[in-house]
Image (tube, rainbow, N blue to C red):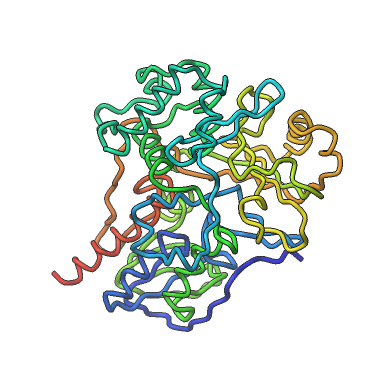
Length: 421
């Protein structure tokens, strides 16, 4: 039986002041904000652990984050709700190593790492003009002058061309980097959103908690209190202030917050489902690390389905309990449960015959990896959808951990304000 890194909660209250459906990051953040304001809150969650899409499984002695995820420490909302020090974060090296022509070339931030910066100068993965354009973009993003308005928004591919980046830089660097983070290998998503992501990369680090990404929702849940969360309770229907569970049990609450992922929220509300972006990830165990780098590895030559690869235990050794190496090969924007053979061939192309000694651990294919955020879409959507109903999630803000937590806080603050009126 699969072991999950989860917490179990019990509560028998059937008439809470505020009922939240979904114990993902948005629901947990909303509940914590409401509790701090002195409000009574109960979360019902369909799954066996908190976290929503931010989940970690324990499998054969490894921590496997579902779909391969990272935390960008530059997100401004994190400090409001999390004790980052307690998460014991392990950071990726800045920049990335790009695989092309049978070898890896370094593209890094010279302001973060002098040695990697020197390697960047000699790299042929992008042109000299691209390197200068990247430095200009870094400077203007940190100052805030490179961000675009909603009306000026276009797809990220067009915007990168407008900024003067060559096709070489776009294909070798931006497609696997931004396409990986945004699950958008065609770079058709919002430039406005992608520029914010780049700013987070320049101002913070990409990191993994010591105990897996599950540690983030677990910390939020612990702060909220176990007695305020019901796991394994799936909602079938909502009738105004009455929430009917699949078990037939009814919970009455004057305020109901729908904090599920977008497809489930659409189903509960009887609305058309919004487009989603899928993701797949193949995990391997290896006797030894194929490289010592702690940087993200990018596919700069379209050599296979995996756009980015991470030697997870180089970054966070705690992800393995048996001294074996954990490797994640991520396939953003594609639902490919049968990707093992093609990814294995790609990894053999990268690392040679040593891949024959690797062991397949698990392939995750997730249909709803992120909401599909297109150009000119608003960063923030309304949180109240009726006299008794509220909604939150990264589909109401930006598709990210940042967006989920902002949405949860915004919804709670709006609800608190309505209760005072």
